[in-house]
Length: 297
Ligand SMILES: Nc1nc2c(c(=O)[nH]1)N[C@@H](CN(C=O)c1ccc(C(=O)N[C@@H](CCC(=O)O)C(=O)O)cc1)CN2
Image (cartoon, protein in one colour):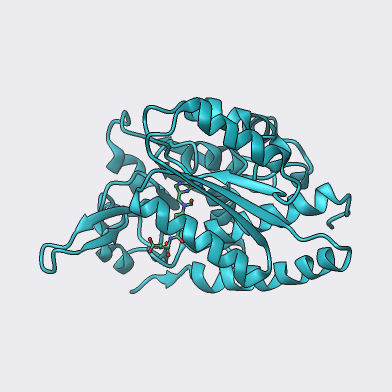
């Protein structure tokens, strides 16, 4: 048996073409959405993701505003950039690429962003709305990776009602918000959130109908640990040096042989990553629609 593929690349392309129509409608009213990005330092992964986000914008006719800043920028100077983007009318939404270098206070930076311009759904007000389960999902943006995972499953006609979902990793961009999203009544999954303090992870894996691996530990989840037929989403990405070529390559959290046991598997790359970017574009378009007072659906 070989797992069916949760094709994030193709699904993201479909979402982009749907967004193109909405961007056209905004432009006909004289509004062009604009995505701002703030990138601090020279981490190659973050650089790749930000560049890809701007490429997506260019392809869809979204303006993009790029602020690449030195790795030793002070908190005060970074806050000035945040204030400028908050005040810039051309920037309808923006993100601060994470992680920030350790000398910077990430929470203070996210909190300083205007919640209405937060294209990542990571401002405390927007995360708070997720916690409070604010009914109208269009009232505030959802974090891109969790939203992308839900969208990827739904568009493959996979519904999680009553399913046991094991989320491995409690980071702010994936694990924590995903648990909140999946336990909404509209999804109704039963979620276990595992982390580095979890005792006996294999016991949890053995009973999980769905596994979301977002720990950033290459190959940590193997075929023999999975329940046969499990739906597996491989989210974690680590850059490792290939011992044969000496070149850096990407490695997910799920071992290659998982495909022999899983019922569905998201490839990595090509699975959740492209969906994260598609959901960012969707948040930017929704923010522009909200700001223009356009009723969305
Ligand atoms: N402010 C944010 N920072 C980070 C987020 C986030 O949602 N907001 N998530 C991750 C990184 N991330 C988005 O920024 C991201 C990860 C992966 C991809 C992607 O398209 N991956 C491709 C492979 C790309 C490659 O060659 O490296 C794939 O999976 O096919 C996009 C965005 C942490 N930071």
